[in-house]
Length: 165
Image 1 (tube, rainbow, N blue to C red):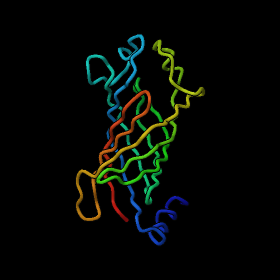
Image 2: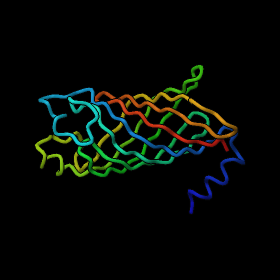
Image 3: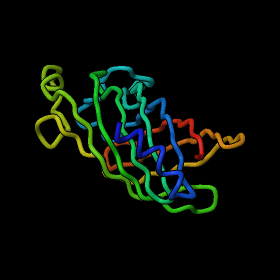
Image 4: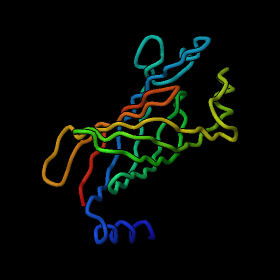
């Protein structure tokens, strides 16, 4: 209920508020030590480094800040839940800046496949990197945005359907 009220009240005090639904989730793993990518699920290339993660989420952007919550699949097709915060600057048509967040996964399912999980423990996986996004299509107050998140271990691509409030 509080989030609903927050979404209703923000347009009264903000001139650059957007609400986005995020879909997709192509993830390219930059590291494939010991051929671990062969054990990944939802592979889109022969090495296993490119996977589909079935991500869906919702985000709220105001000026430079974006808050998102999401769910999807990790590299072994287990369900994950998470949140991110990014602070971006507009550089021409691109918005870019740092992103921080985390998601929760079941580390035991990685161990069962013979993979050492990339987490801080307790299934918490950090998201630290750079976000870059660009509106690829605008129609009225609505738009489609291509989002790229680059971390030291992977690159993730999603699409967002958004509306400027």
